[in-house]
Amino acid sequence: MDSMMNRTLIWLILLLLVMIGVKFWDYSGVESSSIVGDKLTPSTPNGPESPINSKFLSQSPSQSMDEISVSEDRSHLWDYAHSPILKDLTLGFSSFQKMQSFLDNAPMNGIKIKGRSDALLTVRFAVKDLPTASRFFDNAEDRVEPQFNYRLLTPALPRAEFLEGEKSFGAGANVWLGISDERQDWGRGVKVAVLDSGVDRTHSNLAGIAMEEIDLVRSGDSSKGHGTAVASIIAGNESGQLGLAPAVSLLSIRVLNSAGEGDSFTVAEGIVQAVDRGAKVINLSLGGTGESKVLKNAVDYAHRNGALVVAAVGNEGVGEVSYPAKFDHVIGVTSVDANGRQSSFANYGEGVDIAAPGVGVFAAWEDEGLVAFSGTSTATAFISGALAAEISKNPGLSNAEVVDLLYNFANESEKPGIDKFTGNGILNVGRIDNRNVPNLHDAAIVGYYFDPEHLKGGTTPFEVLVQNQGTSRLDNLSLQVEYRGVVRHFFLNNLTPGDTRSEKLFLDGSVRGGDGVRISSKIFLNGVRDIKPENNNRVSTISLPSL
Image (cartoon, rainbow, N blue to C red; front, side, top):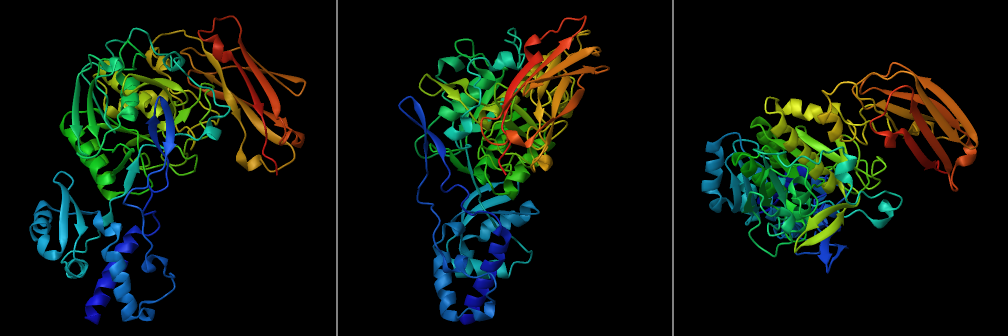
């Protein structure tokens, strides 16, 4: 008996090593969106899947196997036999035959099958009889490493303090993006899959849109507000806010419950179904902290089969991008406000590819609702719509070439070049549409950049960035920058389309804290007409962090 207990404990340690360093319960205590009356309010999930305290989990990492007594073994095993961790696992296989053998023998090995994906060669299962299951895995011919079925959620609603000082788009996001009013045919022939909490297809803003629905949750009450908002940004009709690609067909796949919670296996299953049903763009306004193998395999399946996957980077305001946005072959989307600044609530780091409007965007909600929708979910919907529009307008381009259109004609943000905050820049549909129109002059002041390495006290350098967002080379530009009662003048030449130029200035240490310093910049085109004069000026108040 003691040897069986030790073997079981060894298997458990191997299992835990697979999952070490990742939050098992990345969904617990995270805010999710719910709707009360006609107001969006945050709520905290507290369901039956709450984490339990285990003596094994709390054990010191330095304690050796020899120091664990047999009586302690039994106590730990009892904890784990009833742990939710063992009730939802996934396991991938190298061949269909091996997966089928596992399925055929699961009952006798103390395993209950909860789901399977033949396309991904993956099984979802629970451990019912811990000693029997551990004996099976211990004696398995191939080394197999079950993985916890990581939780995924709709990104938490941005906290109020994150939205302070950020400028909302309201009904103006499409104009801000340079989107043509004549876009009723954009997206025709393209299917966009929205993997979310479901879509209210009866909403007037979605009336007349070709839509299929699949429910992979199959239980519990549904709350379709979030998915409806995403769908309306992509494909809404003229009865409300006209979507970016109103002629697309939609495939709504419900992978999240009414609280906006789901799991990696179900989302992976949704991705496979979206691909198999012909979706060219897959919108994932959801994410989590776990690097799920089954989810990664689903993303790769989509990539191999010609579908573009778009995902939100998350709304926690931390330097870690959510999965699946962080995976290769996924377009990770962040949010900017109407001033073109990256939203303070948006996550940043490796995996951020592009930015789009994400603050106070008017969107549909279930039950004929209309909300000011904020978050990286919002921004993700704009990128999905833009991809669908460009696929329909450019049928001869490959997926990679369509994505490059968005990246190559994105507006520069506040940091020069590709960066961890907005990736390749901010979506500009107008620049994409006008890319082949000659002699368009458009000089833009895109922001002020302060290198974090220089925020160390004393005099602080910063850059004023100017970008040529037109199609013609710009010469004889005059840049005027005013701050602290001083006016500086600069002259710029030979700025080719898409290029960015910066001029360096300095702030002394006296502006740290307090009310900050007002910086006003203007760019003048001499002898030519600027097609978008509203981006020739920028006024910002800068407060350097106190040391």
